[in-house]
Image (cartoon, rainbow, N blue to C red):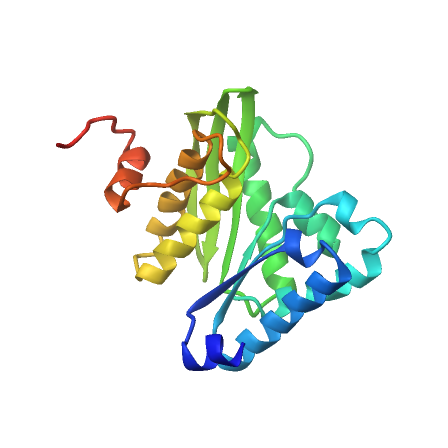
Length: 224
């Protein structure tokens, strides 16, 4: 870790709650990574990825570990269930008319998360409404500093939904690493997440940035 964070100067380390909760050993490993990254000033991205089967019987242990990681994280990602079940933070009120009606509720949730973990400067969540197995509404919300960036839900055609959320995070972090204007981070993430849902694998393999931006623009034109 000294070599990775101290010598090589990794800019961002991304941690997933799936690994953080997989076993006591992987949980401790994620804690050690977060501590080392914080020591060297490396940005820490943490996607909570709550899974009830991983937490069963280990709630107290994992609550403490996730709290420590989140307290030093710069970027926090999760949906309302993640924040409620990992940290007990009150979620958005029930009801609302579809995803559009829930956006203000999600903003309230993220504001409460920000109060709990003030070290972080970026908070993000994806928005999904399943119309049918192969048709979803897909959007995102990101708070960067005091600036809201909302990707209004749009219809996407889905082959396999697994990996869409991770695809979004990967695209968002890519935009951060590239030094783009913040409004582009969730846009690129939306497109890489949408791309991942069109593959049977749980990840996408875009040829280049232009391909991803074409997905964002809804452009099927092929350049030769």
